[in-house]
Length: 631
Image 1 (cartoon, helix red, strand yellow):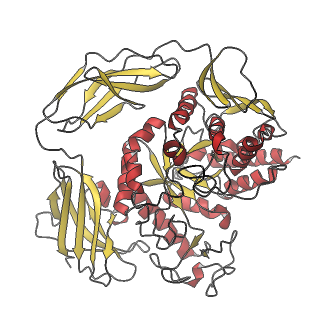
Image 2 (cartoon, one colour):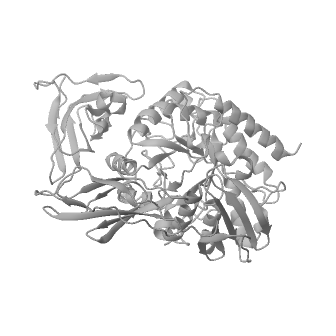
Image 3 (cartoon, one colour):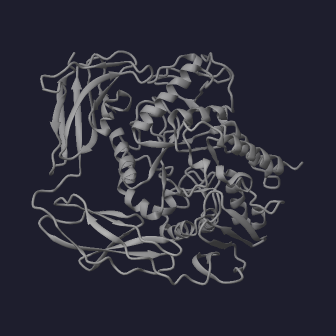
C-alpha cells in the first residue's frame, strides 16, 4: 500500500476520533473547514522595545486586510533579544514591550474581532544566572532531560530532539506540566492570547502539545516541525507533519514546511512540476491533510526581514517571486499565513489584500478541493472550489488561462487569479439601520445592518459630509477623527469583489459631538504599592471589578512588576481600564504555580475595597499610589 494512501486512512481515522471527543474539549481552527487568515506580527528585527504599540496601532488596518489571527513574538522574559531563549516564563516583559503594552495590543486586536496567538517556546529554557537556576516558575534539576549538555541535569530522557543553546526541558515531569499549564491558562490567557504557536516542536513529544492546548483551551494551535527535505522524495517529510498532528491527538496542526520547501524549489529553479504529487494532488502537507496545515511563504527564520538582504534568510523564497508564493497559498486549502515584513516593509499590502479578498469572496477554506490543471517547467495552474464559487490560478512565466467564462480578480508578475462566472454585475443591497453609539467629543461609533449580495459583500464605504471617510469589512466603525461641538453627516455604502456598489444608506445620519475636553475611551492606570512582604513564588497582582483586573479572580488578575529587590520592594504596573468607570480593587499576593492567594484586608470604604473612578477626559491616565499592602 502506498504511503499517501496509508496516511489518508490515518487522517480519516483521527478525524473520526476527533468528532467523538467530549464537547468540553476546546475546538480549534484546525478542527473545521476554517476561513482563518494568520498574520505573523513580527520579523527577526522587531524587538525594539515598542513593538506591541506598533501592533496595537495596526489593529484596524489588519482587520481591513482580512486577518483573523495575529501571531505574536515570544511574550516572556528571555536571555536572547528575539525571545527564543526563555528565562522567566511568568514575567511578560520582553524586548518587544512591557506587559501593559502587550495586553493593550491584544485588546485592540480583540476589539476588531482579531484573535491573538502566542509564540510558545517550551522545548528549552535558560537559568536566571547560570545554566539551570530556573526561577518564576522555580524548577530544579529534574526539569532538565538526562541527555542535555548540562552536567547538573537529573531528569528523564528527552522525548524529542536536542537543542544545545539552552536546557532541554523534561515534559514528563508533573511539576513542569503543571507550571506550563498554569502559565498558559492564567498568564498568557490573561494577557489576551487565545491561540498557540509551538516553537521547535520536534524537540519534545507531540502529545504534550495536545495536553497544553487542552489546558489553555486554545482556539488555534500549530506546531513548528522543521526538518530536512529531500526534494526528490517528499513523502517522508510530510509524514513527519502527519505524525505530529496524530501525536497531538489532532488538537494541533503543523506549519506546512513541505509546501514551503517545494515553493522555494519551484520558484527558484522554474520547477513548478514539483507542486503536484504522483496522485495528482498538491505535493505538500495540504495534499494529505489540508485541514491541519498552516501554509506560508516565509517567516522570521526562513526569510528576510525589512528588506531582501536583511534578516535570517535561512530558507527563503526568491525575493522577486514572493507574490507567486502568495498566489499559491492564498488560493489553496490549509490556513494561510501572511508575513509582517511583506505587508508593511516590502510594499506588498495591496497585492496581498487582493488575494485575500478573492479567497474570502470565493469561500475558500482549509479543506477546499484542488484540481491541478498544469504542473510543468515554467507553469503551475489549478482550480480551487470554494463555498461560493471557484477560483482559477496560475504561477510561473508560461502562459495559461482557464477555459470557459471567468473574470480576473488579481494579477502580477507571473501570477494571475480568476473567479468563475461571467463577471458579477449585481450590486449588494443598501445597508440599513445606520445608528450611532455613545458619542464623545472625539469619537462617533457607528453600526448598521449587513447588506446581502448574490456572491458576497466585500466591504462597506463610509461617507462623512459627502466625502469618503474610510472602508471596513465589518458592520461597525468608530470615527476617531471628529472634534467637539461639531455636526457630522454619515452614510454607508456596500460593495462586492467585482466593484458593484449599492446606493448610500438614506437618510443620512446626523451626529453632533458634545462640548468638552478630549474624551477618553480608555484610561492607562498605573498601580503602585510597597511593603507587600512577598515570599518565594509569590507575585503581586491587582484584582477588581473590571475585566482587565480579572473580575475578582486572582488567576485572571493584573500582574505587577517588582521595582528593586527585597521582600518590601515597590511593585507597579500600568493597565488600560474603561473611562468614566467606577472601579473597586484590592492587591493580592498570588502564587501562579500553586494558586495560593493572600488578600489584603478590607479598607475603610463601604465596600471594603479600594475605590476610584477613571477620568472621562484627557489626560487619559491615572495613578494609584497606594502606599503599603494592608495586612
